[in-house]
Every structure is written in structure tokens, then in C-alpha cells.
Length: 333
Image 1 (spheres, rainbow, N blue to C red):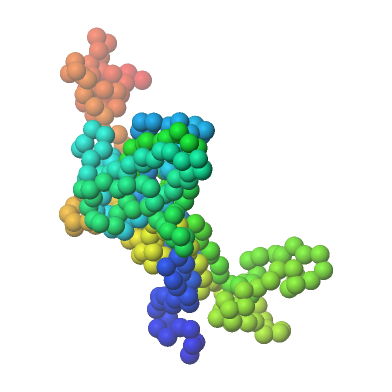
Image 2 (image 1 turned 30 degrees about the vertical axis):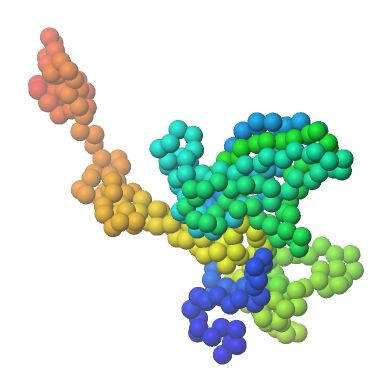
């Protein structure tokens, strides 16, 4: 038995290493298309929260308003239980409200002779949030300052109102939950999907991840090539920006992928997978429900003047007898 496949051929996940910022895990008995779909969903379609609208009330720093607004948008915010927040497009409010947004305020003024640094910790989160964690700036440095926003000299000040909203990285990179997602299969290149370019020795110029290579199985010298082999083990390395834990990114990615697949199944079968009721009938072939299909005779239509069209079955009489298309008289041809 394979020591790394204890489930006997069933899809299973094995975590190799995990902490609060990074997770390295292995999915076995999977297929390449689904594994790559999960990677793409985790990169671009897992919802998070980020500053989307900034109202500039005062800014006398050396940086332009747009520059600071851009920096504010890239500050990672805690996105725990982000599903408690509505997407702005789904909310009935005019601009923003407590149901679809979190408001943060930045107000700082330098009164001393030294340069004053304004950090992410200076963002004050308003009350009325869906939970106590969502919207808080992510601070991971030992000093507890967070990302630096701007520097102020004596007499300079900054005052801004920031509105954080829910979104996905498909819309803008500021909503990306992960900094990077490593994805690898067949580390020993047993399937020969890669043709390494090299100058002298490919083994020296293309180093192999020894840990992953040992799990996948090192090929033996002279081992015959299996033309029917397909990848079944996939190594993921998920690194978060701090808004979501790595395991939450994976779970949310699986949930989003399931929802997308359920939508496709519902469109094809005509059943709404979310509540089990029939939809609009789904995709149908031309022969379903007694239809004639493509190439069948057209039944025609009746004009507003009462005469059947040229493609109908009744024909229409003219001053010279029956039309050449209908059945109301002898065919003059």
C-alpha cells in the first residue's frame, strides 16, 4: 500500500506544513483540470474586504490624494466571516451602509519637529460591523505598527474617511486573499510533460524539491515509460496576505468552486441546485419534449391579413387561382 495514500484511492488531503501565514498540502487521487480550477479560484474568486472608496477631507502632505488612496486600498484587512457582509451590488442602499461596508477613519497631524509616520494601526474602525474582527487592519510586524501609509512634517495633516467593501481579485488585485499559490505535480517529471532546456546537465540546472519528489516516488533507472499515466498527486503552497487564514482560503475556494459547478449543473438540468426547484427548463436538445429537431419542416405563421404565409399549409388564393405554395387549388406550374 502507498504510505501516502491511506484512503485506498479516494480523494484525500494531507497537510505537510501549516501555520498562520502559509499552508503546504497535498491532494491525492485528483485530476489535473479540477486541481488547476481550485488554484485559479483561490487566486481570484475568494471574497475578501478592502478599502474601495476614500473621501479626502484634508491632505497637506507631500503625497497626492490619489497616491495615498491607492496605498490605503492595498492595506490588507481582516476578512474573517466576510460572508456576513453583503456585496455592494446586492445591497439596497444608495452608496454604503453597515450591511455592505465597514468605515475606517484616518486622522493625523504632525505637531513636533521630527518626522511623523502614519501607519495602518492609525486607522480607526467604526462600530456597527457584522462581527468584531472584520475590517481591522492586518498587523503582523513585531512592533505592531502595520503598513506605513505616509510621512508628515511639522504642520502637515491628513484626514480621510475610508469605506471598505467586499469583492474578489477578479475585480481588483486589492481583494486578493493570497500573495502567491504554489502548484506542482510530477516533481520528478516522470510523465515527461516538461522538456528542460539546459546547457550541460539538467539535473544540476533544474533543482528538484526533494521532499515532494520523495512523496511522489523517485523513478528507477531503466523504468519503462507508462504512456497511459496521468497526474494524481498535486502539491499546493498557499501563502496569505493576512486577511484570511490559509486553511480558510482553501475552504472558501472549494465552496466557490462547488457553487460554480452547481450553477452549471442547474443550467444543464433545469434544476436550481440551491433549493431543489425547477428553473427555466435548462439546456435542451432539439428533440426533447416532442420537438421536431433541426431540419424539420417549418410550420409557418399566419399574417395579420388572414392569408397563410408561403410556408404555411393552407395556401392563399390570388386573382389567377391558387398560389404555387398552397393546397387551395391546382398547381399552375
